[in-house]
Length: 468
Image 1 (tube, rainbow, N blue to C red):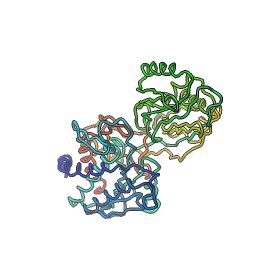
Image 2 (cartoon, rainbow, N blue to C red):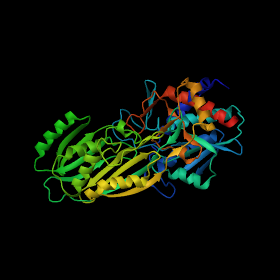
Image 3 (cartoon, one colour):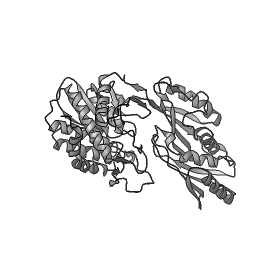
């Protein structure tokens, strides 16, 4: 079978129906609603159950592992090809023009949370596998389509899978971009704790909130401050908004002046593509005379993190590898309470040549001066698969055949996908090089034609991997 695009087009209606049904489930991890039955909250488990029921009806052998992760299996062989996708999504956040969990197609684009990350691509790969099964293709490998339910946090589900199931021989994750991602930078968050209090200053920071997840550039920031000069600060804020690429408003409340800044969300692996509302708000506040922990919190954000996604302001912080590229940093969660203190989550994507200890020591040299404590969160090492590995070559050729993009080369990115859990694992689509990346943003979308093309690419790729 060589007319993969024609075959993919024939699946379009059923694919979109099943995809939309999954996208309507708001499968955001919710630890506050976690139970023994639903360790990540009920919604991720609901999405997992819906997918496995669909796959079982389609004729696959399925298994649900602890409402954390599951798989659909087909084929036989000594080797196992894994396709790893995820059913959880980022919190919707604000700024949507449509309901994020009521998908709509406008101007050929499917809008909704999960359209691009990762329900749309995942279902395209699933439909490709389903088509090959239904055509009676003889598989010489066992294929497991594995779906996790907390990829956007700490991968509890997929780690559980690798604890209780045999490791796959090779595989890919349809959770990035085309052509092939054969390298992923390492990841670690540095968690900073800031002292509470405002000292004896007349200007006081009561509360500061910005950011939803460590891997998402904060779109919104809100601070409440007390001051003897509210009109002066109100006037200053008006000028600040005029001079900077953010929106916002300021209002008087019972607790003090409430200042809101609106920036632009983006994926934490490319923080320079967003506008960090939190650091912009800190930059505005930094002109006033705060004291105590509030001063340390504002000063660190404004003087060291604002507009510095490459750590140029930290002595020895900036680093680049000729193969894996630059180190990047996203200030994803920024919070302060006058009574409880502050918290800053600096999420790093680092190439080989850098270690989490290097990063911790670099940040501590600055943080110590401001009485801010620094500790490491869980880390992932850089991952790299040789471009000459047969899985890279097979996937690359399928992409080239279906798109005609003969200039395409394997790439290294800052994003982290399930592909890195396998020694011979890569990320493969489904974002096309010409399509804007709206993952983790308001108005997330994926062109329907791109999704159908990706299905054709997956059809050819899986076919060649299981019949070679």
